[in-house]
Amino acid sequence: MVGAAAMAAAVVAGCSSDPGAGSGTGPGAVPDKPSATSGGAGSPGAAPTSTPTLQASGAPAFGSPSSTPTGPPIPTGAALRELLPTAATLPAGWRIEGNGSENDSGTYVLEEPAKPVLPQEPCTQMRLAGSVLSLDYRASGATNEVYDGENRVEVYLGAYHAGDAAKLLGEIRAYADRCKSFTGKGIDGKAIPLTVTLQPVPGLGDEAVDVRKVPQGPYHSEEIVVTRLGDRLLFLSGDNILGRLPNLMQLAMPLSKTAR
Image 1 (cartoon, rainbow, N blue to C red):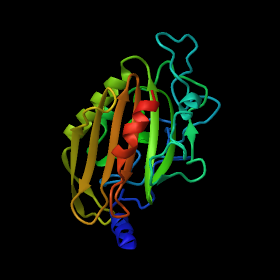
Image 2 (image 1 turned 90 degrees about the vertical axis):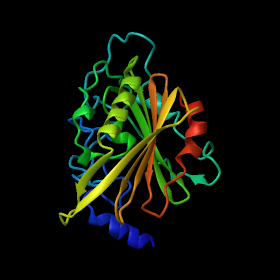
Image 3 (image 1 turned 120 degrees about the vertical axis):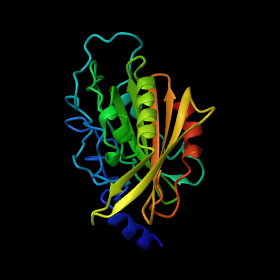
């Protein structure tokens, strides 16, 4: 069952059987030239066309470090890292391997984050992962990965300047609406119809959405739950390459209370 799913997923450009596809040094990647594109054209979970890397120290991956911050203090990536789930805080049935491939943006907070690219991003490049969708406006971030049984889940916590988290969530809504039905292409050139749905999640954080990308045929689906916590966004994402989607809401509820 698992082998068949993985082989089917590999048929589509972007149906990568590697759950970490799209990250350079960990699931929380930031490209040297920011782009929401982390997948190959035309598929669910595409292989990366660029190799993003999230720097844990040194100069920020993009933008410029803040020297004269205004408004409420924005936490650094190193500070956000302390809010990621651990073995002690995970729900029953969940686990973490080692340090969960932790990664963060270091001690910098970007005063002028990169110009947003999601409004122009092609539907065929859509990948539902926090390391990708968090990029626009992001000032700092941290990430790790955990498991719901055998199902890998990427956790990404991003911090933004005042109003930018709500702005990015609006971008994500618009992207899902614009791409609610489109046709991707497999590596063999075969057309793959895909459907994208977005549902609000009442009672989670200040506002939250659940987005799913479902291909027609024997290819894996993707899901992401995005929760706004003031000027932070919590992204939880996974796929059903092992036969089922992870129970993202089981982790989103407790984590949304501790990640503010």
